[in-house]
Image (cartoon, rainbow, N blue to C red; front, top):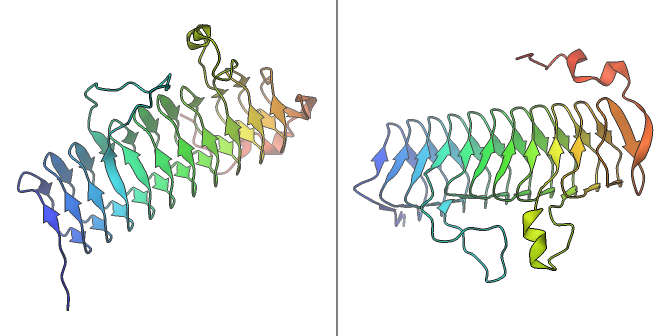
Amino acid sequence: MHIMNRIVSEKALIGENVQMGHNVIVEEDVVIGDNCILGHNVIIRAGVRLGRGVLVGDGVLLGKLPMKASLSAVTTAGRVLPPLEVGDYVTLGAGAIVYRGAVLQNRVFVADYATIREDVSIGEETIIGRGVAVENKTSIGRRCKIETNAYVTALSEIEDYCFVAPEVAFTNDNFMGRTEERKKYFKGPVLRRGARIGGNATLLPGVEIGPDGVVAAGSVVTKNVPPRTIVAGNPARILREVPPEQLLENQVFYEKS
């Protein structure tokens, strides 16, 4: 016995050759482009725009609205968010949650159980790994790789071609939740083009990793990292220059813009 149990609003705009699994819910004010595939138990809330050829895995929630905890200092409650914009040929893995107000450019890959908050922009062909959390008011450039279980805090900036290894932690509050004065200084880390962060490293609030800068695994970065420089340790200190063969400009995949 095959019962689909789909609920698709008559006010949703569905393109050609769209495939839907069991128990799919599509609310009004949704646009789904041609040749999209929606898995089982997918929920698409109002205010979502899917481009062509988007693959949506089982159990995905798109267009979620933020909920503000009573002590939250960064989340803004009650304002009207723009639609969630998902570009062409984006892949959204099983269990992923993408909030309304985010923008995912063409060919972004989001792995299983990742969460992408409101006011987040992600550039073309960037990979967001399994279980990654990207908090609100963050920008990520094109052709980046953010690997499994990395945490990208609110108010962070990651430019093009950056690499963030598994279990990396971004931070944005030097006061760790104490004093009202802290709210004037919230700032996530900044990764300039081609920066690379090793596994389990911690970046303190507002630090800047220069272009082609490298942070070794397990490091705690308390100060800005100069361009083309490797740092290591707790606190991280300059180790040496990045070898020429590892510079972004010398990679076959690099497309100068």
